[in-house]
Image 1 (cartoon, rainbow, N blue to C red):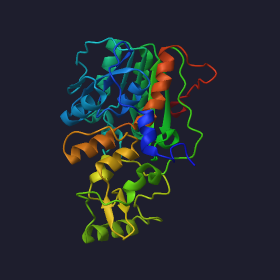
Image 2: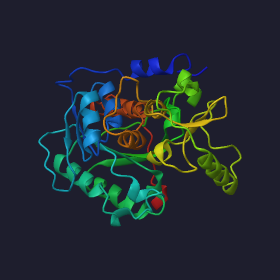
Image 3: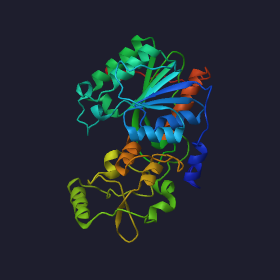
Image 4: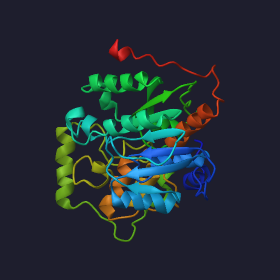
Length: 340
């Protein structure tokens, strides 16, 4: 039995409660904030977030759920910030470094690292942290090394690690790169000792329900899926299997009409697409967290988010570091052997 097997949705509410005002807590400047998945984890450990995000619907979601300020703004290297944060966090757009985004890196006009690095340079927080796809370590590893060098040149110790959300109570295999720049000691969070949470445990009764407005795959879509799976030689069909964690949840597989689509196969053989709430559960958003905008905008917010349970694990390490309570015995130096 896993840590969350008894009632996953109730445990999410316990781990990630809806909070009141955090006046007086250390300020965390949240850049490229999205709908607030990363911020929710930081708020849950007693820190206070201030968001900047370019998409209006995501800003509305952030404000409505976190009861925090989220400025609707397209970030640049010149964006002014009227705050003195203890921490700067963010998830610069991953498309320049993902396979689906063609990995154009710094040549991609969606590259957010100039804005992120400029904010760190001007504000000099105790800790700066960013999350991105592991694709930064491959075709764009030279650019990644340059980003690390710029943080080092500002006087920070820089450490990075690939973390899989499934090891922190999130019911999906989602590996992402986390980079931390700090001036003291740092310890990445240890994985949970419990077994992974399955998609079935996360969705519970939702998995076999037919909600109002449910969208089922058509006969032609079923045929397309069959061809896709035959061509890609799938050993196991790409339905959402309830006995194990989900595949990585993305914008594309939440609502894209492709063979990669996340979908549930009901007992009667029909396949239906996931609802917004089901996608949110797989990302570890508690049920009280409501999303604003059109259905497509809501799916995009979910797919782009850092899973809040993973964010909370990272936030605990950040809180310990800024308060000087990180144990040096737990600190692990991360060697940048990739570039040596």
